[in-house]
Image (tube, rainbow, N blue to C red):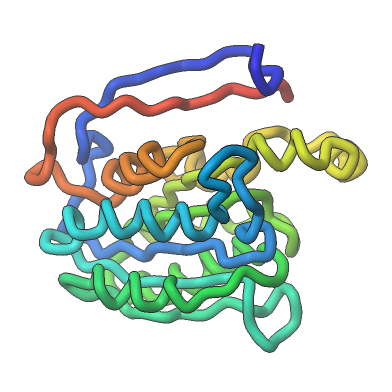
Length: 236
């Protein structure tokens, strides 16, 4: 069975099935770390970050007319490896062009300070009565414990959705590295969504990432029928 999967669950969900309240603002937390420069193993051999930009270009126009969305980017920057977190955009309506302009200039670099980036998104949303945080990542936290603040996130009215993009490829390419890192589970950062009643998804293609972004940030008013997602269970 491919990737050593124990099980593959397929579920059909309409866009907005997460019960998203579009009066709540959302922050997109975007992975700009060095691993996002990884090339696909098959044609057209695009980089992960370019595929992620493509998915955003397809999904955001269907989301932003109905919901204010902001942007945090983590990974590249002049600071220390665990300090490069940048709030690029505060939540605003019709933010698609601004978000796309920001991510188009991101060149993958650095480590993965995921929890620090989420903390920055929480700081933005706290005074707005909470909100939804959508994390797009191709790997695990490399700067401390991603799960350490989950209780506080929930208490502050945050819902954290985690969209893993081509995460399983990391384990295929560098199995020894992950084995030496303490036998990490193959579902990094799922604790974030579990503790805050969010959604966790593993995506592998531009189409899957596009649908996942619409599911986590979209509203029922822009639904267009059932959508299929793959949620993958890996060995612990």
